[in-house]
Length: 220
Image (cartoon, rainbow, N blue to C red; front, top):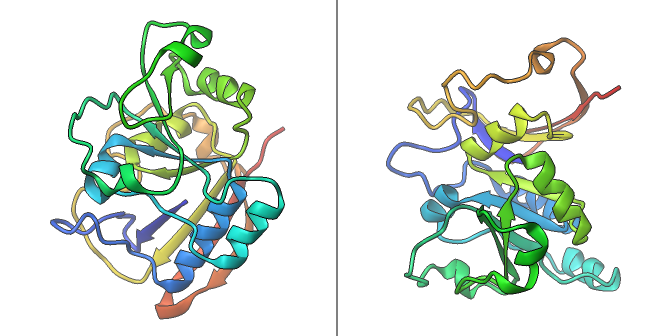
């Protein structure tokens, strides 16, 4: 789930921590968080914003509790996080924090023995996101909301792992390098550019001229 400009940017140069979407987009984001088991974000995204998104709406919080779930989904950070400074507000937010990092340890051996300050659990990246997601599913994390950034979104697209794109388009043109998929030749699967690869699920006009669109990945 991303908010992007008309020219596909996700951040304003020198103001990377400003969210592009308006109030209605915030509600859509919270609804996605309420659906999810965990919200996945990259290290650079955390360094820019210093926090992750929280559900604030009482009705969504109550529904999660009534469903027997925690108020907030797990914050899942994908990064070789080495910072010793834990002053980011992220580390005081009322949620569980898990870390995925490159490691030579086997998944099972990490489950109880591998730890890092500031995180409730540390798990290894298993070489591919497909394998890593299978391991997360074994821990009950099936509904994963991808919050960014661009490198993480590109990695998931490269393995064709994104089932739904939810994009809020803000009516502004920004320019600059902060595109939601990096410019480099990533070797994305050609099928992703085929007509019919993505099916429009819905589109919704939001306040301030924003447009929320949802596309499903069509799979055989």
